[in-house]
Length: 240
Ligand SMILES: *Cc1c(COP(=O)(O)O)cnc(C)c1O
Image 1 (tube, rainbow, N blue to C red):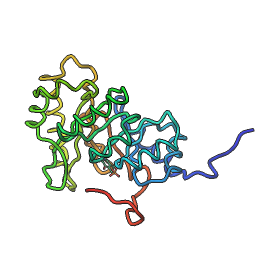
Image 2 (spheres, rainbow, N blue to C red):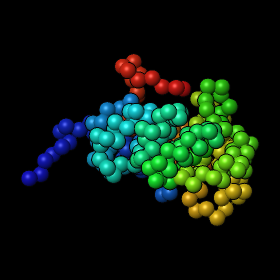
Image 3 (cartoon, rainbow, N blue to C red):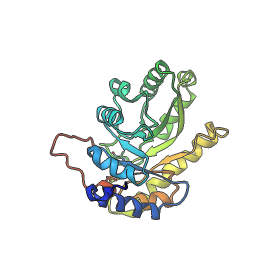
Image 4 (cartoon, helix red, strand yellow):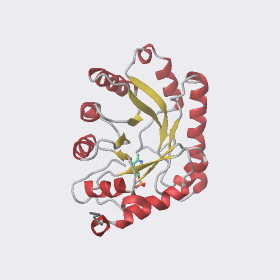
């Protein structure tokens, strides 16, 4: 018997994903950012083949991982507190938001206890806005040159991530994404030339992903354009 599930579906989510897919070239992975959204919405996206999802709260992610299909790849894209690493360490596919050596060491320690090597990106400060997280290029160099970093056998640095400024000026956005790509190139040359896994540039959200793609993004993180606006009035809070 064939069940027509579309009756139950929010077809918008599927249409939105299909429209975005038409715009993204090969080599760019779409991360569906499902933070604050219910599991039914994630299953809608899943039903049209989406397997990569992004979340920014460790406990919310732990719950969704427990409830939803095994073959989903979960990316952590939010600010990660050290005491929350334990909720996600045994399944997370990629942590986009490493912004200190201290956090990296803690991720490494937790990853070792579950015998994993966990892929990470350095979050770079490209917007230079007070409210945002991220490292300077200088800080990343000093991490990568440190003796402590060399001892970390249970993490793997796969590239960089950045969040663009909130601005209506596409030139500003483009400038920031060019800066991120530049940092990626420098790090690749200096530290990761022979490391095939160092290949990711995570940039671009609903408002700026077309520019990010033009400037060399390999991972784009799209929430509202897929799932609609988020409602933080219920019980969710978000750091800007
Ligand atoms: C929420 C969030 C996104 C998605 O934002 P949209 O504008 O809804 O596409 C992407 N990246 C990060 C780091 C986020 O926190």
